View: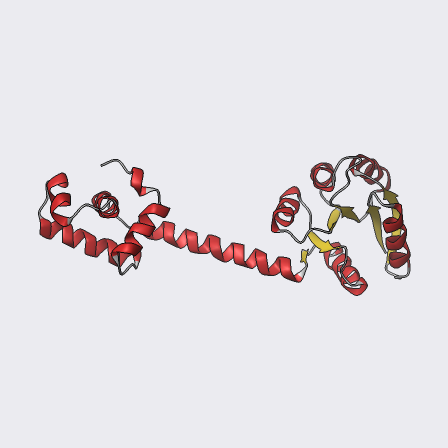
Length: 218
């Protein structure tokens, strides 16, 4: 049996969840709480296997703060966040606080049951749109990481040339400023383009802007 603590500031919501969960033979509702401080006390008293935690509880400690505190002292307790907010900010913060997942309050009943079973086994659960956004965020960070790796391929001289090109200096002006030949400047530019996998000057300028090279000291 999976013992569950229901935490929500609305009595009607708690009652509905209790009826739904008690209809399942694998679940037992250990107790209810209306805000975060009460949730912590009930966790200490009842030692539930998992908690269904409302995210927004304006009349007491909120779900994120309660999750953080409970996970700090009772790390084995699984927490599934209940939220009305289909928002990646809440999603990432909940995961950072130690939640095993999030589910929307308007999710179908069978999806809630699935989420509880999944989280109770130690797995993570995210509602479909959240999974998509999490993957998008991950791929964005991967892309940023790859750009960072390419930038590290540049020599100090190549970084100087890149910064000056981005600032609008001509090959001749760069050569005079760095006390090198125009041919050497052209060779550095070619190397920079190849290493960064860029093809045009506008792409170079955009890349330099993103990397903060306009303030690069030469």
